[in-house]
Image (cartoon, rainbow, N blue to C red; front, side):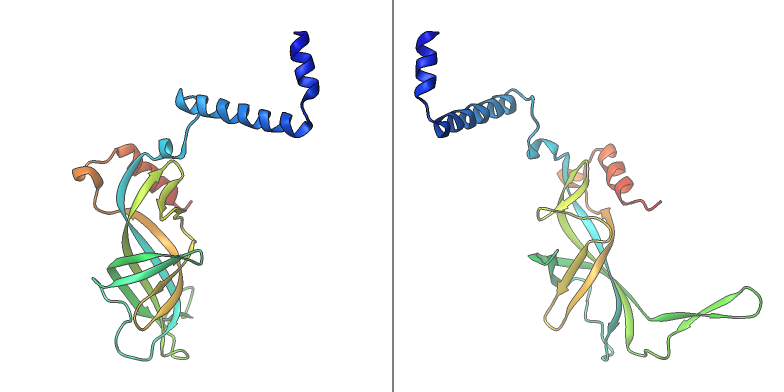
Length: 191
């Protein structure tokens, strides 16, 4: 014990810090190896395809054609970080609407004639996702309702928000844990 104390007194503070860091790293490695500590890969419950619905409000389009076409590819940027090209699986759009009051407590929804070229778009793209307890993860980003994204094509670059995420084609030959499907749907429910 006396030899250990003499050796310890000869160590500099930096040496003590280095030894402590090495011992801590060895402890974390041992805990991970024996399954006492979860790693990020252990948190992934499944891989599947998801449909991501992106909503664009008040897009000004003066041509008669929609900039989005079903079956085309569009480049997606998530949180200002370029990600990849995704396939457009569905496009819905309508002219901007306003609500006009009518007699009594009724109302009528009509096209907004003050903005004849303003449209609202709902574009659905499909991608592979990792399903975790926190929801779907696409390209290292948790995809949640309200997440700002940008879709870019040959003749457009538009900013929108994610309005829905749903499972599309199921991974692993059409099988997916029903609990995972419930988890994804629960994470997306608006209360």
